[in-house]
Image 1 (tube, one colour):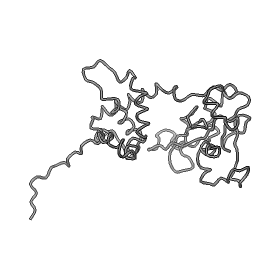
Image 2 (cartoon, one colour; image 1 turned 120 degrees about the vertical axis):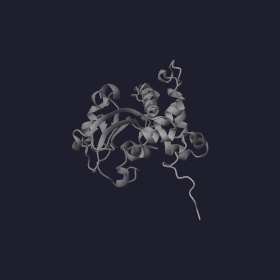
Image 3 (cartoon, one colour; image 1 turned 180 degrees about the vertical axis):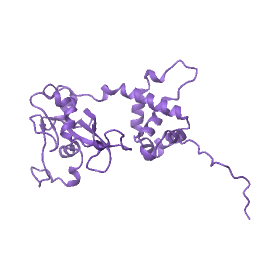
Image 4 (cartoon, helix red, strand yellow; image 1 turned 90 degrees about the vertical axis):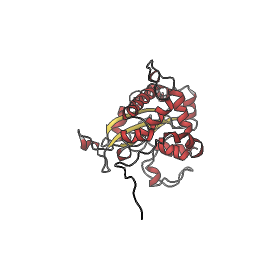
Length: 266
């Protein structure tokens, strides 16, 4: 006969799991990426870039958490949404207080924003980056829109955030370099119901394409965008094999146009 000697009023708290990241980065990188949504190599690159930011250094008698811990908390926080994450979930996973989890997220965000112009910029026409992009034709960039899912219904103008799917979205326009998919320009903030052609007008390249592209270069877009001398939609619907390019299926047509043309030119 079994006797219960002690029945706690609350279940025991689990130990924090953030210390497992060191093991995951070496032996189980897929688990590392599942938690932080970046590969260990990318994590180290980001860490090297932001570690010297002044926000991680102060004169307080209470030292801050190591930058690597703060970055891990930030990536775990922003890499999940809706029911999968909350401040309580983050602090239990990392073994810190709710206030510390919030402060770490804010500090890393400020350090990353300080590096914005270093990693997101438009290449000059005489740069090596632009030279790699027009290796095949005089195209430099590709543009496409993507919908970012919102976890909750917005309280103001909620119906305008609807797209063709029964969810709520923000529209994000990205202009990328073709050879490496690095972001050169973007526009974000329009509602999900806004058309790509309209949100594209908020990008820098739309207003300054003459200066940025010159007279002999253009960007690739899909058929949702206007046809201009500097803005070229390569096709309007799937077509049969033509000029050595295989026909495009419905599945591939739904991918960003930049990825399609990168695969074609490889």
